[in-house]
Image 1 (cartoon, rainbow, N blue to C red):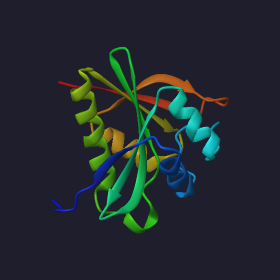
Image 2: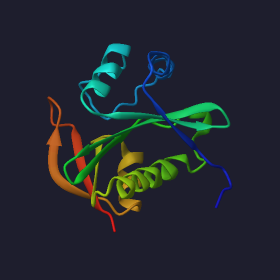
Image 3: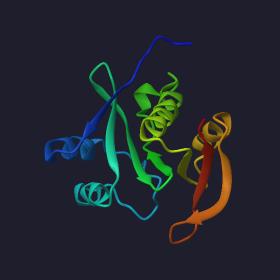
Image 4: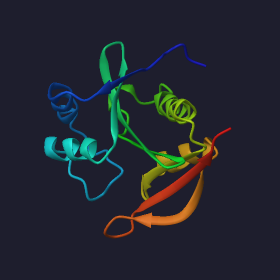
Length: 149
C-alpha cells in the first residue's frame, strides 16, 4: 500500500468555491448539475458539505457529503488525470466511511452515473450494493448503499 495521503479540507468561503469551480472537469455525479459557481453554492445551500481532497497542496478531487436522517449521502468528482492510479479514489471512500462514523450514521449512500465504470467498480470493491433507485431526468444516476459498523 502506498504511503500517499490525501488531506480533506472543508470548504465554504466564496474564495474556496471559486477555487473548486476552477477545478474544471466533468465530474459531478448529478447529470443535471452543470459545474458552475452558482450550482456549487446551491449545493451548499441544499445542505451538502464540500471538501477539497488535496495531495501536497494540489487539488485532486472534490468530495460532497450530506447527512439525511440516518444516512450519509456522498458524491465526488473524478480524480484529476495527473493523480489517477495512486489509490486516491479508495481514500475518498475511506473518508466517507470516517465521516459516517463521526456523524453516527449507519448507512452510506453513493450517487454514481450508470456509465461511470470506474466508480461502479470502486463501489463494488468497497462492498456497496445497488439499491435499485435511479435519479436524474433520464434515470442515469444509480444509488448505491453500504452499511457501516
